Length: 258
Image (cartoon, rainbow, N blue to C red; front, side):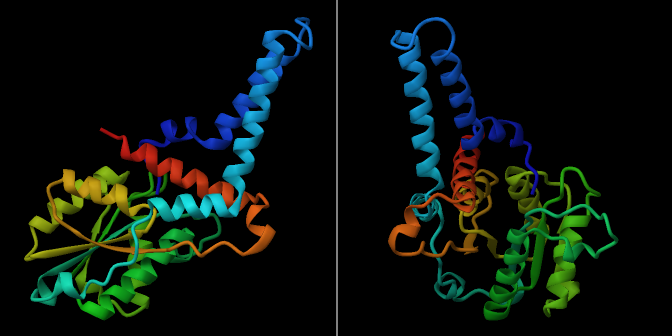
C-alpha cells in the first residue's frame, strides 16, 4: 500500500542511488582535467563501484539472502493460541495495494500480488484456528478510501469468511497508522488475542509499529521467498532480484521511522 514514507524511500532506492553515482562518476571522469587526474580516477572508481553494487543487488543469491535475513520465519500458532477462545480472537490483515479502476473491474480483481497472498494466507489462518473478528486495515493514498479494504474483504468472503466477522479500517495510510488504528479497534471489541497477517518481509516493521501502539500481537507471516536456483543462474542478475533487494532497503528505511 502507499506510504507516507514513500518520498524518503524513493530517495534511498538502490537503483536511484546507483544511477546518481554513475552520473556523478561520469561527470568527474570527463571534462578537461585529464585521464590520470585525481578527479578522473575518483569518477571511474565511483562508476565501477556503482556497477558492482548494481550487479550484486541484482543477483538472485544476494537478494534471496537479504530477504531471508530480514523476513520473519513461519510460525506455528497453536501454542500461542492455546487456551484462548476463537470468538475472542482478532485477525488483523494489513492491505498491500490496488490498481486504479480503469476498466470497471471489481476491486478484489485489482489487488496487488502481495495483497492477494495476504488474503490467501489470512483465509488459511482463519480456517485453521478460528477467529471472532477479522480487521482489514489500510487504504490506498490515491484511490477512494474504502476501495482497497473492501476489495480484500470481498475476496475473503468469496473464500468462505463470514462478512459479519469482517471490520474495515480505512483511515490508515502506512504501517504506523495500520498499527495505531487497528489497536484502537481491537480495544473496542471483545478480544483477548490479536494475530497479524502480512508479508514475511513486512512483518518485522509491522511488529515494531504494533509494539509502539501498545497492542501485543502474534505474527502470522505469509509470502515467503523461494530458494534461488542452483548453479550459475543464481549469480546472473535479474530485474526481479533487484526489486527484491529494493524491498529490503524499503523495509530497513521504514524501521527508522520515528
